[in-house]
Figure 1 (tube, rainbow, N blue to C red):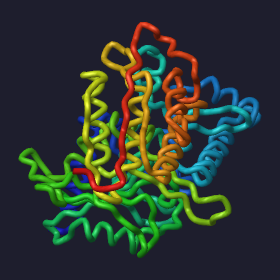
Figure 2: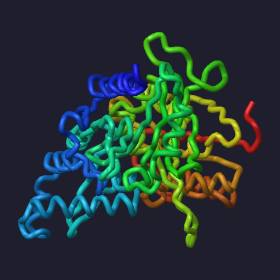
Figure 3: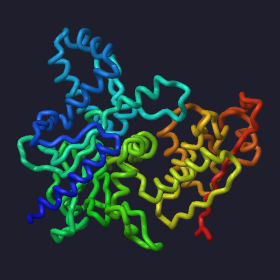
Figure 4: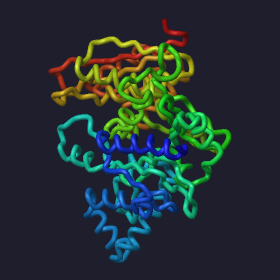
Length: 412
């Protein structure tokens, strides 16, 4: 039996699970006539894109067609795809999904993220309108038969690819990584965009990268760990790596990662370096989600310990957790924490945290640097926001504060 057959079965299993259990709209394959849905020149699935826009922003679309393109919907569609593609190239995938695009002064949202509470049913309805789809054997390069095993899309925007290998054919995640390094053109419009993540997967192990650079492509492990070491624990119910598609790629978790985890570190002014995309390692994602889930149920007043080894991304974990706690609501849609305070004795880490949190929340006063004395901290604690000294508006509730202490030495 050929290796392609073994990999096809693995591929079909993952794609099938995402549709049957993971909240995806459907599976697309070139053999079933879906090849025309994906515009390889623009790097966008136009069928999903316009289905989403028509379902959520039909009036805005009619306005764009009439005022921007002389009432010609075909011209409008072609030009709008070019506009989206250009913005994806310029700003990156994640920023476009979070902030949308504007064409002839008409602004379009390209994704709606799940609200932190259910107080506004309209926001929940918009979130449910997102179209998640998976394409098998995605022909990512125009005029070529080259394909990537899986492509994950949100409203027509490619957000991830995956190369799959099956040890039954003598290949593993190592060969999948080699395939990205050797056979996937890092200059390809779809694959090169900032914010797109690429996974190398076999039934036992997962690795990921956010930047293809030919032979210099650097992959990081995306495993759960096993017996205080590398790898993944045995899974009596299936593959060791099933957590990837059953947990990480499932609709709610995946949209949450795109909306509130991934962030981009921009190079210093004047630098020609490429922006660095920070995608959570599995241990970071898992820890943040577990703590958030516990705090949602138990409320304020509990202590948690998260132990990170050196260089394992502690600043990002702190930033993700602080931001999520700042908007956390319980089952009754009551805010759990009035204020989140991050205490650190490391100046460099303090700056990293401010920059990271600032990508998620742009309201004035959300991040306040305490770099002088205790009096400055006291003033920040008085107000409803870090930068305000006015008292909290909910006088009936005491101010619940969570603090994080990051030590410069190893935690014990």
